[in-house]
Length: 400
Image (tube, rainbow, N blue to C red; front, side, top):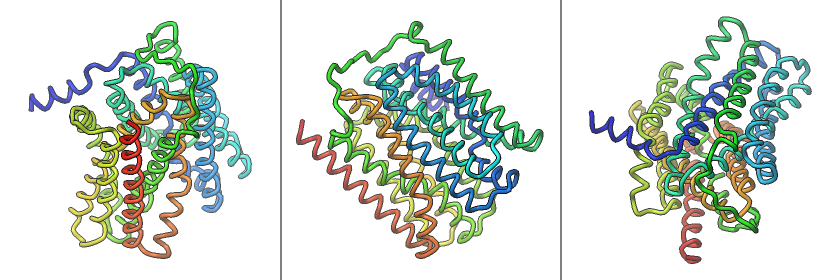
C-alpha cells in the first residue's frame, strides 16, 4: 500500500507551479458550470419548453461550443492566451447571470449560443497556456492534471447543483455559476498574470503555418472526430441500453458512471507516467486507447451478466485515460510548428463536432437498427479511426 501511495504521489512530481494554478482555476470553473447537467430539466420543468424546443436549444449549445473553440483559437493567436482566458471567465460569469432573465424560446436559443461561444473560447487558450507552462517531457502529465481537475469539477458540480436546486431553486444555479466563473477569473489575475509567472516553453515561431494546411494534423483531427463519436455514446445511448435492455436501476447506472470517474482519478496519472517511459510514440499510444474504447462495445453485444457491463466500462475508461492525454499532448507538440491557438482550436472543435452529431446519430441508429447493430457500428467507426491513425503514424515515420 505504501508503494502504491508513493508511486501515485511521485507521478505528480516535476510539474510547474503554473500548471497547478491553471488546474485550480479549471477546477473552480468546471465545478461552477453545474447548471449544464440540469439545463434540459430547467428548460422543461421551470420554463415549460417542449422537448422539441429543448432539442433545438441544445443544438445551439453545441454550435456555440464549436464557434467558441474556433474564435478562442483565433483570439489567442492575436492577443495571447492570458487575455483570452481572463476575459472569457469574466464574461461567462456575467452571461450565466443574464441567461436566467431570458423568457422566449428564440431568446434562449440566442442566449445559450452566445454563452457557449464566450465560455468555450477558454478551451484553446488553456491548451496554449498549458504548453507554455510545461516542459517538453511533462506535457502529457500536465494535460492529465488538467483532466483530473475537469473530472473533479464535473463530479462535484452536479452534486452541489442538486443541493442548490432543492434549497433555493434553479435561479440559484445561474447566480452561483456566474459568481464562480468570475472568482476563477480573479484568481487567474492574481496567480497567472504574465508579470508574475515564467513560461517554461519559450519557443516562438517567427513564421507560423496554418493548421488547416497541415495534412498530417488534419488526418489526426479526423481520427479524433471518429473517437469522439463513439466515446460520447457512453453518456447518451449506453445509459439507455443499461436501463431498457439490462433493466438496471438509476442507482446502478449511476454507480457504473461513477466508476469511470473514480478510475480516472485513482489511476490516470500513474498510468500516464508509466506509459511515458515506454518506447512508444504518442500516436501509437492514441491507437491503443482507441482500440480499447472500440473493443469495449463488444461486451455490450452479448449475454445478460452485469459483469460484462463493468468490463466494458473498464475497457472504455482505460482507453479514455490513454487516448485523451496523449492526443492532447500530440496536438500541443504539433502546434509548435504553427499558429498555436488555431491548432488547439481545431483539437477542441473535433470533439464539438462529435457532440453536435454523435448523440443524435446514436439515437437514430437505436430507433431504426436496435442496440446491437448500433454497438457494431460504433466498433466499425472505431476501426476507421484506428486506420486513420495508422496512416498518420506511417506518414510521420516516412517524413522522419
